[in-house]
Image (cartoon, rainbow over all chains, first blue to last red):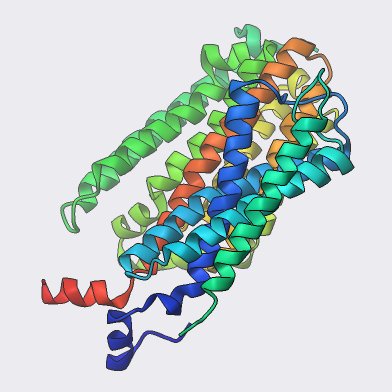
Length: 162
Length: 267
């Protein structure tokens, strides 16, 4: 960031084309995507459907730590991304295509991490209990991969910084 | 050891209740007087700051004395709600009431200057460092619930008082290390503070889940499970408010120059 002093910089600030904030658009999207995926996971599957549990007895110490970090980070990501979004809007620098690319990328990566590392590798919690979990796992992970592919395409298409 | 505190009546607990009550009344009156007096010279001290101070002090005092404090002694769920009030919500409300700013603008210049020198001393800078403050706050809780300290707290009035004092002070210091409402000697970047806040929140969440399966000595399983969930979701709620205020501060301070120019020109 250049220091904002003097007439020239005020001029630059007055006109802020979106490509100046290309990175901020991407980050706002990614953080919102992570927050959204975690929110849907917690609210719908955990609180409403009760597919998840507050704690299940198979949880290992590593799982608890990883879960703790993700839970705390997702709250922060949701709120911070919305303030970044508001900041882009007031600068008239919002680039929705790139932002959505970030959202899909963030949500996809989070969901794939959750589905592969947390569920399978660390075995923290499963999508459901007392049923054959295979179809749920495949659905969960395929949706994640699709989001990552579409998100990457959008981010790649908006990569030009001019 | 007898739970002298709970049953009341003994001279020590009566004395403590009396001292805490006097302290409570005097900080309420003191804050109000300072606010009203300094409003005659400067712009009026905002109403919401008075309310935050009253609410914050009340949150803390009900946990230390009175019927709620007595109930918290025998019920882990109430103990946990008390912990949220004393260590999180109370300190947050007090921070939002900006007591240091009020004090600085009320005192005569020479005294105010001496106070700001005091606030810049190395000990205060050290404990207000975000990492140290988080360690004192969340680390203190881990120490309390995973060592015999929790049992001692219920056996010895002195330990009980010290633990409460530590939780209240550590909660306050941690909050001012993240939210710069009052002036602070050394400022850390938003990213730095954000990382510390996320790690501290994560450790708080982990401790709640840990307590769910490993209740402190003498706590029945049902109470431990309910208390742990209070800690987890209640902690989330206060942390959400802190993160929201933190991000709002960022949003306000990074406003583009253009808006300032517009305001200046009154466009």
